[in-house]
Amino acid sequence: MTDYPAPTDAGTVYDELDVPRVVNGTGTRTRVGGTRIRPAAVAAMERAAGSFAMIEDLQARASRAIADATGAPAGYVVTGAAAGLTMATAACMAGGDPAAMDQLPAAEGLPDEVVMPLVHSNAYDRALRAAGAQIVPVGTNDRHLGAGASSLEPWEIRAAIGERTAAVVLVPRGDLPLEPVIEVARSEDIPVVIDAAGLLPPRRNLSRFVDLGADLVVFSGGKGIRGPQSTGMIAGRHDLIASIAAQHLDMDAMASTWDPPTTLLDSGAFDGVPRHGIGRGFKVGKEELAGFIRALEGFVDGDDNADYADWDARARRIGERLTDDGFAVDYPGGDRDAVVTTVAVTVDPDRTGVTARKLVSTLVQEDPRVVVGDRDIAAGRVAVDPRSLTDVEADYLVDRVRANCPGIDG
Ligand SMILES: *Cc1c(COP(=O)(O)O)cnc(C)c1O
Image 1: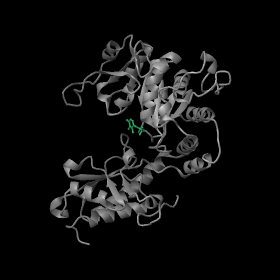
Image 2: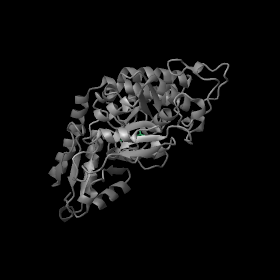
Image 3: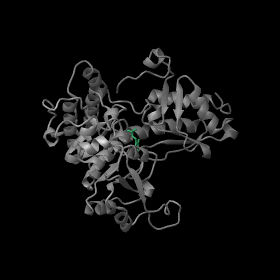
Image 4: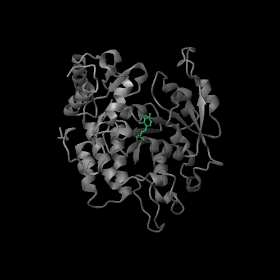
């Protein structure tokens, strides 16, 4: 394992920039900096910075790597899964038509509806709307509320699909079976886009949604893959990936000399050069592309069980030390649905002398900041995700939790 600086070491770039460092007990959350990039990816980024390659050649190479990893015909690197959702939607709306591409996000005359199970709706719906689409929710939330028997029936999907439907979008989670939805969409000839941003590992998910019949599958590069934080990948159909490329690549090119790799994009299919598309503001640099390709290779070469065992051991090390200090601890996750073993720590103010809320806000004010999960704060619990902690950082985190509980001796 790479030697990372201990929380008490001075002299990191953040110290030099006078920005507080973070001991990250939240896993891969974007606002805490995402993941620790694989060392081979960091090295590739540094070397990529020193010389040049055409972005379209790098994207064509990435397409091969993504195809190999997922079993999809093609792939493309974007600036994160959120950008991937915008680009996937734009591709489903505009297809191969440069005039339609040029018009987005104005959607007049284009298929502009994205059909989505109500139970899959989430804050990243915004990324679909950013392409100019509107969301058509289907089904009910009854099951979630403990009332009804099902969230979605096939007839509801079929009834929601019409002339204006651009895509069906799914965000696999919970217990909604994907197969019936995909089957209806395919029978209506509507592309299926799957947001699988955070669903790696398990590594079998690389190919699972492609195998189920999805036309485009979107993954984060900066979560389980441990690539650059500002990357994501889209795996899927050649024609849709070509549309994404045409709407994302820089188009400052002369028609007479524009010659991108045909495996990515067929310039002969266009009567001239498309204008900069809706994705031009999400550009991916040569450093991110080189780093992402190496990170994906590293992820593919890795082993789920080794990752799970590593996280589980670190979670238990944290949990056992906190148990010794008198905290009630349990270990959610580490199962099929949530592969990471996490540590849920109950903070009993009568014993600790501090509420969970106060503890979290005190830890985050320290230097270095210690950031722990606060989603269960209302129930008096804090959570620690082991993935972005070294063992030294894990021990430091436990020490700081204890030091901020005046009710606990020494
Ligand atoms: C993390 C996440 C995203 C956003 O991914 P980025 O790579 O950070 O853009 C989108 N959808 C879901 C379900 C996610 O978990």
